[in-house]
Amino acid sequence: MRHQVKGYRLNKSMGHRTSMRKTMIKQLFEHEKIQTTLAKAKSIQPDAEKLITLARNAQKGDDILKMNARRQAAASLGNNSGEIVKKLFDDIAPRFATRKGGYTRLLKLGPRLGDNAEMVLLELVSE
Image 1 (cartoon, helix red, strand yellow):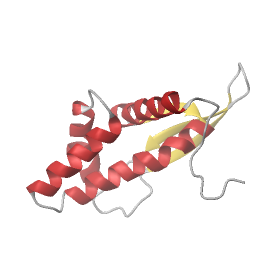
Image 2 (cartoon, helix red, strand yellow):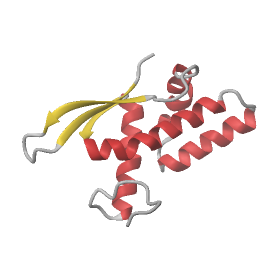
Image 3 (cartoon, helix red, strand yellow):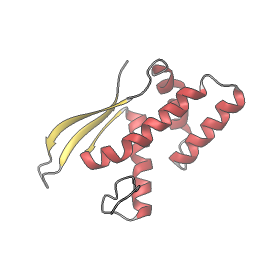
Image 4 (cartoon, one colour):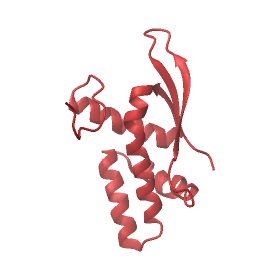
């Protein structure tokens, strides 16, 4: 039974899974859309939306709260994420200042030719 067990295991080890999620979230913020499988997109969508909410809520706070939020985002995205954090807080978060949630969208693209996996386009909602 999977009582109170959240997340997708994706048939990968824990280290591979976490590094893949961080990389995919960084790519999503950098390019503002990525093409991936449905399971991977569903596994990173909540984490990406939480980071956008963190950045959006930090805009209303003082300087200490803003710096703390940037450090939290950098810690969850991993090493060498300075430019991505800057883009998240300066470009992406102000775009969603009036939106209460639902910052990402999944568009189904159909099955992949090689293994028939369901492919989707995960993108930031444009507003």
